[in-house]
Image (cartoon, rainbow, N blue to C red; front, side, top):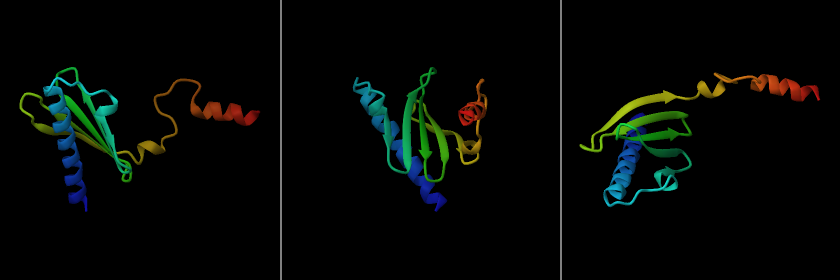
Length: 112
């Protein structure tokens, strides 16, 4: 099952990279809306990085996993840069946030 999912993720990433790369090679710069693709369980986002590479981020909403790929525009090489299970991240109530924290806001609201 994980092998099939990995193949699907890689396939979508490669397809997105090729589609966006072809549009740019033809002088058509896709808009932000054209550079994002989604399905109910898989989100694909593309971003041009400052160093000239394309970054593709895939998010599996069912399994709560995110993968980041870089595409070297000169060679077309695709490299996996990071994978993270977001399940535990999404359980954190607040992190690296300024005052008032969500907890403080909730306490103020409950006082009313």
